[in-house]
Length: 249
Length: 60
Image (cartoon, rainbow over all chains, first blue to last red):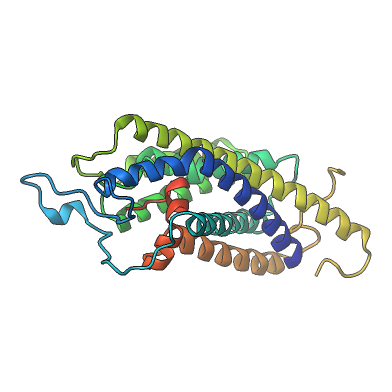
């Protein structure tokens, strides 16, 4: 059983990780590279410099969180950077696959090929849409609020929205629906950390394109993850059922 | 595919088995998610930089 769960998660992670990597290379990464050109003042180097504080604004509130110094390691642009992105996409996909697998096991909500699209759309709603409403996906070179505060809000929004979805999946009752609506609204009512209104060289058109691309990427990633997980889980369950002894670990 | 077949984790399991498997998977999944999307360490951040932006994680 452990083996089936982890095997299904692994296969789903590979499928979703590869698909999202292809989509990112096509529609997302070019925008990140283009934004970095504005970030580095036209230089090709990847510096993570914070925007200059506006006159009269306290430098501490603009959070120059990414001034790590000169000799800090980062993957070389080109093959190395692409390989690291592919690898971390698959690792992130494995993380998400294990999380929905855990939710499935803990709450006895099977993931199948038939309902995999629902799991995918649920994951998309919890981990892409809900956090994006308060913290729109941003590119390098854009002013941001404190990173830890944003991470906490992001995680809270995902958790609260995910909990709402699990609740309505488990309990079909009016009170559960009411609590779920409250759970979906709650993080959005607790205002997300706001980015300072600092000037940025990143053109607004690019920012809009980036947000659309990230949302689309999230939907694609999650639907593939849910369907692949369900398909693999079906396959492993059928195989386990066909083998009288063992194989279910 | 037979629709009566249950998924990987839920066939004939006791509650404690489900709790153990689910907790291990959750812990491992969160570790991977935090490692790729949230960790402050600059090597993890820079290695997963484009993933963080593309997946909508809070980055710089």
